[in-house]
Image 1: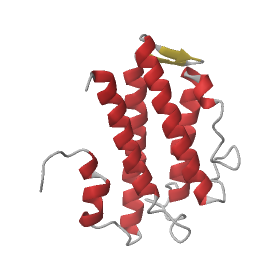
Image 2: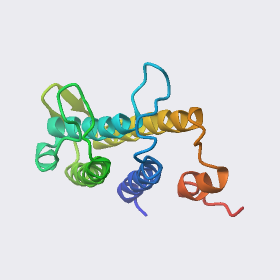
Image 3: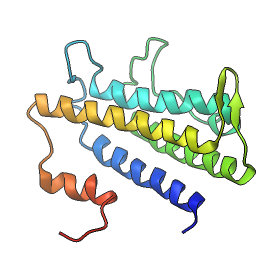
Image 4: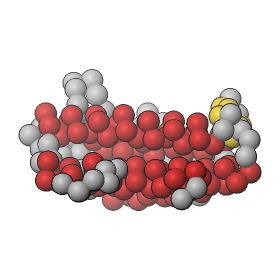
Length: 167
């Protein structure tokens, strides 16, 4: 596996984790928060998509063009349909991957608007870090609501996406 394939594979793994975590969010828990002033679970998902969409619009606008908003208004209120929010995440997952793949092939920076990434890898790392931050907040909200997934769920759905050892 060359470096470009490894980087894209890391994004794919990250997205499988995000998808698995998103599957834990349902109509009964979508409004729980990691803190009193935190975002609800559905807003976390909508925000993750919104950040992907915004930065794509800046540095790879053709890949953002077909993405719809997962928010109902400019304040970031999540769409009422949770499945649509999750579908938005899947769409932006693919758009980020394609933009990074294309950027790696072309070489050089990804830039537009007020945003400049000197290398597509830096854009990818920003997206991975941002997703990971919100996944942590989602886990915290679930824990505080008594719905933390057990280790038996986490191993195949989170850590097993990265580990190569056999337990």
